[in-house]
Image (cartoon, rainbow over all chains, first blue to last red):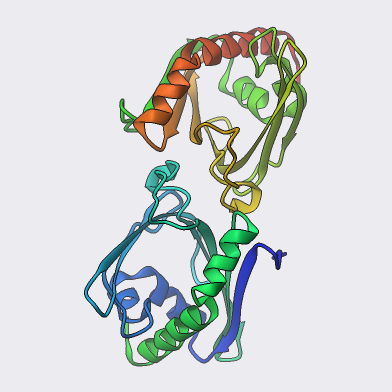
Amino acid sequence: MVTDPKLDLVLERIVDVSPELVWMAWTRPEHLKKWFTPAPWTTVDCEIDLKPGGMFRTVMRSPEGQEFPNLGCYLEVVPNRKLVWTGALEPGYRPARPNPNVPFYFTAFILMEPHGKGTRYQAIVLHADEEGRKKHDAMGFHTGWGKALDQLVEHMKTARG
Amino acid sequence: MVTDPKLDLVLERIVDVSPELVWMAWTRPEHLKKWFTPAPWTTVDCEIDLKPGGMFRTVMRSPEGQEFPNLGCYLEVVPNRKLVWTGALEPGYRPARPNPNVPFYFTAFILMEPHGKGTRYQAIVLHADEEGRKKHDAMGFHTGWGKALDQLVEHMKTARG
């Protein structure tokens, strides 16, 4: 996949859980809630309708107890290989309502392929413009998504189904 | 498909060309340019990459010669049955750049099914909010999309492949 360094953010890593376990972590709410937000933030709710046009909804809670809902729409679902969703559309592909609490929209590609017994993992995040990418970068994209991925690996090593 | 009368606009008609010809009219630039804009407006350019994530780009020209480019992204492509695209995403699923010339985004579903020798045709257009639907309605959605459909039928009755 070709990326644009001015508009996109990319996290790439080799992790030592299989693509099947990474997929499960991303697509089952009971797993996703365990790792999706870097501690001490938590993910207190998650709804997944795993098909193009289906809902991807999460609620994150800050250490102070404030809740932040996120609503998105899946675009591509290729089991154990590729998951794509966007916040620019609501479920059913409806354009998202303008929301002053959302500083920018992004579309995320989560790509995974076998690498030995583990996974070559890529998270590629597309923004509308350079401003969006810079904001997301300044919010700590690499640290945040990296720490969440550590949590994913840790959780899936002990989780079974 | 369930629609929301506060947020969606719907044009439904029985037309006397087959679903295959309606599909061809929507998916091949050389045909689309013949009918897509109600005369005396014209469609002077069209680019189609017919797959989810692919480009749907048109340029409309007003009778005064002013050109209006439109860029969108296909979401679902089911030959002879269903075509879905949105202007809220650019090709490759990138969120659309904020553009003051775009008063609202919409996602369009073009649905067709056999009806005798013709087609039951539905155009269902989803907006983010009531304001978007109202603006689109006031711009003459039903007249405009209806007249374009008349042109589509007329053109495809004489076109062959």
